[in-house]
Image (tube, rainbow, N blue to C red):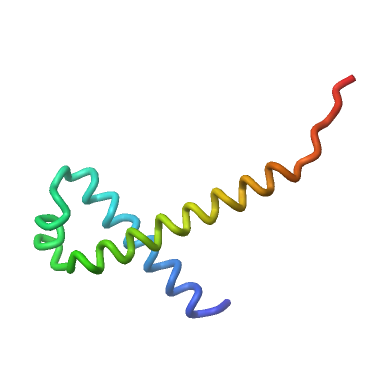
Length: 74
């Protein structure tokens, strides 16, 4: 297994948890980042990466769904 790929997936999962924790906390981003000891630029970088990944997965799923051949039940 590719070590770099595993590392990236691990980081993505950790940042997904951080971003979700911020959303659930109700804190603003600036305050949350100060408490967590992370920079706002780090937060926004990983948020953007996660959003882009989600959009890519949705696009791939849409293409796959459009390729499915409908079954005729007659």
